[in-house]
Image (tube, rainbow, N blue to C red; front, side, top):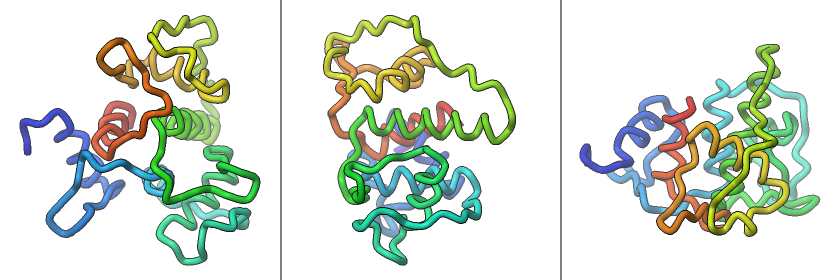
Length: 178
């Protein structure tokens, strides 16, 4: 629906081939997005580059839709697993995981272009009501997303770091940043 807040982001992601529909006629913007889907969007955004790494995750099956994306992104330091040998591709992604993957992708992309990353905001005070719920590994990414006005808080000045991201929220971040 063109009047919905998520329309432009979803349209952008679909038209750029970053996101597919959930069926031939539906996009399911309110559906929670998975870790595998987000890493696949980033791999497509990068142009599906070639890589030499091997799969270290036992739960990323050979030939799966996200196999190449996970192997590439892990090799570039864009993603980590949920355990030493697990990536959890079908697990719904949290908001802090989503922001961290995008933050890491941008850092990777700037390094590939030999540009000064300049994406850290170490002195930015986070003033969300639930700042104390942000995982330590996600703090830099949340600071960056807040400073760049990419992360939109939720009502009540919440960042909701462990809340699950939807397809619409992911698409809104992609159009905002890419």
